[in-house]
Amino acid sequence: MSYTHRPVMLSEVLEYLDPSPGDVICDATCGGGGHSLDIARKIGESGVLIGIDLDPQALNAARQNLEGVPLSRDIGAGELRRYGRHLGGGWLPESKRDPV
Image 1: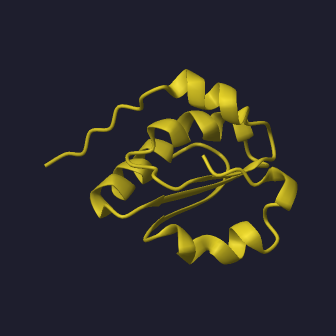
Image 2 (image 1 turned 135 degrees about the horizontal axis):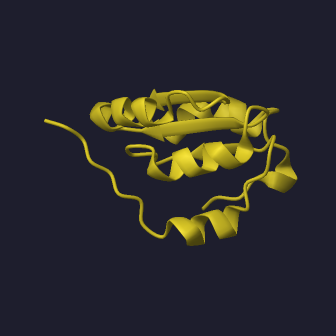
């Protein structure tokens, strides 16, 4: 069975987040990586993308969708709290944290 993910409100999400080169962004419900792919293209090689989802099938789809996009990324299964040490402890300054 293949995994299909169609991102909704993509332009609104990109407008709100306004991703720029070098940003660190966490997609805590990355699904198949639909939003993550466009975010990754905007943050570029100097950016860091953290993609999290509970569904292993979705994560495999996200990995495939992001293949070939040059950036630092960590796509993993589990809950957001697994990544708290990265998001709260150095990667992301307090002024840039915004729970969306």
